[in-house]
Amino acid sequence: MNLIKTLTFSLLFLGLISLFSSCETESTESLVRVRVMSSDSIPVQNAWVHVFSPGGSTVFTDPATSGQYWRKTGLDGWIDTLIGFDYGEAYLDVEASKGGWKGCNFVHAEQGQTSEIIVIIKPYGDVNNGCPQ
Image (cartoon, rainbow, N blue to C red):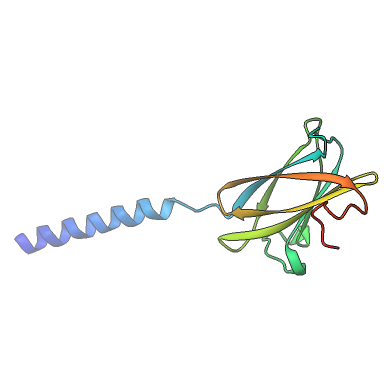
């Protein structure tokens, strides 16, 4: 009789553990926040921000993005974009431009986390704008 009670309790306990552990799903998305600033530390509104995976590889889960995200900054110079990708983390390139100004940087995005980066834009041709030459 003791064996039946122990077996019943064990099965009930294992069932509860599997029930609660299966309810938690890990987010496959990351919130990436980019702020575009001028070299004078002034937020730049209406700048185009391009977030993409380097080398043209596609790490994103949303096929509609084609591995790229384009957004325009708001009045405060920020863009927020929710990015879904297949791996636990990704290093993404970030380019920002407005008129004759451009700047580049990268962001380390992790699933379920928020990542923030500042991109300083400078006149085209400035070798210190962070963009590959």
